[in-house]
Length: 257
Image (cartoon, rainbow, N blue to C red; front, top):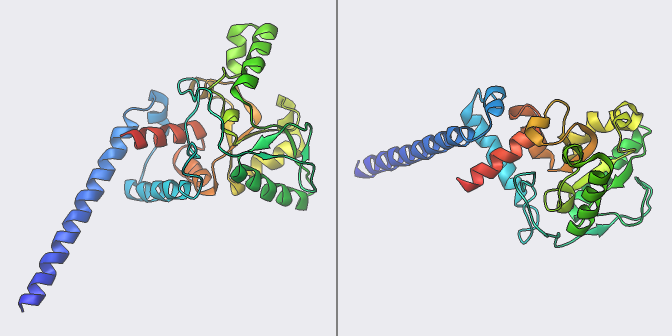
């Protein structure tokens, strides 16, 4: 009888601790959202916090599958969050191959991004589409030149809308790809339509969607995709209005809380 009583006491304590932990986690969700922009708080609706938390843990666990000695896969880099002169620990040089096309010989990506690109490219080929990779990793020094070029062409104000200052570009992380023509016309091409429809299935997320310049800091770029992995793409669509910036900001604040 005493053993049975002790068992129920243990289970009650266990359940209480689980509930306390769960309540704490759910409260943290609210705390993190309270720090996000007004627009984010209006647009993002968490109908089931318990499920949201479970999905978030899946995403954070998936991030552990990548190198621990480098910046995390979901690392937030934007106009407000600089990575300085960071360079990835490992880069894979993109060579001519049977799966995707390259338009330059100086392209490279982090291994996980190149592997995912290859998988997506094989799928595109099955649909008669050969992806063209036009831009990938950019060093701090390279981005300095790119930004300076656009300032010279368009002036500082306009350059800020379409080019990142050095240290604030997703390309510097080694997980972003510009596809095709790198122009607005890309969205209407067969390649652009395929990528937009299918990229998330392979872990690629559109970084700068139309109508969100006030959130991302950049005008619409239909050609710019960042590799974040399939679980993160699924969560982005399910909980964050399919806006990458919302999700990455939330994860950044969650880790810092």
